[in-house]
Length: 393
Image 1 (cartoon, helix red, strand yellow):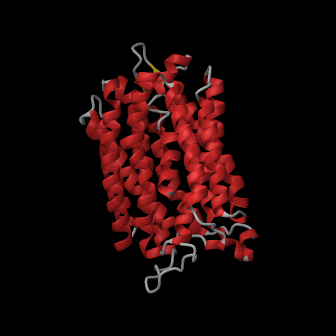
Image 2 (spheres, rainbow, N blue to C red):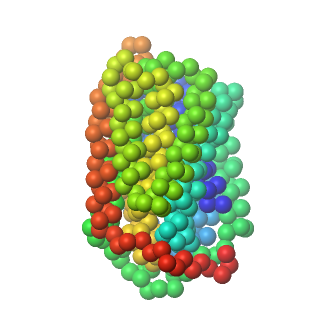
Image 3 (cartoon, rainbow, N blue to C red):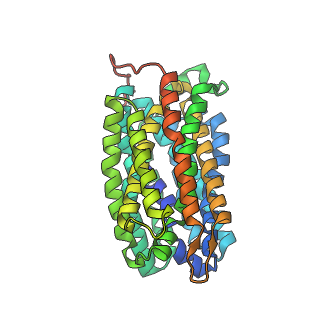
């Protein structure tokens, strides 16, 4: 159930940027301003995440998740009614607010119910929504947009989100164990461990979102990848991500998070160097995109599993909300920066993308260092006894 909710949440976010050239031409949005549309979603999720860092642990998890997914579905369907950049950005602001809360609650529930020694694999299962949205969702959305217009994916994804909200309400148990302690209403504890986890997420996301809002346009216009094959490209990237996320979860559980993070960082840096920094690119679009997507996904699973050990259960949702707020703030800053940094040439090519890719690779190098420091600050994982789960399960 959680993987399905996370799938539709990620699809709502991920499908917009690949469709960027479609709705940009229909609504008269300049190609180099697509980062603003992506940044609106993440900026909204940042503001709501800050509020959630003070409130989310005061609510029963199932009810909060249901409300957030209903809001996500309605906001996404509103995007289909956009008549220009302003109305589309407003719809994405609303979707970001509800989507950020839904993501926080999905991983809070995972951390509540799954013991630490299996949390890497459990995180990979729920995070597989990222890969499935690339394998199934984004290709289907692109094809639906090609055949039925760019508004159709917003309507379909919104309706699916509403159906999932009903299913979550019916299938998930009530989750209120975190409410049985006084700490649920106490201020969120801030310490060096939280700060270092924020640094790890920040370095990874700042680098990624310099590129992600403009990646579809770069592949199509600069690298000459055909628009009609973009769905297949996301299918390949999603399949590769599904495999690497599973491997990363197992590797994290059996050893430590540093090794998949370090391996993923090296591979992402090489992909950026040979696929975007050096011109003309040395890598074909399929290989460049697949390595970039899959290694970033593997790195994210390891970081998230490690960060779930930072807060106590009574502060888990608030901590993850603060973490998501910080991550979305980094995403918004990067997306807006990319829009300001890039320019559009006479032939439509994006000018400045190689320098942007170099900056992304340099930022990513800070991720392994932050993970290494965070592991040193955390106590050893408990392996003797499983964490009890509610009797309803």
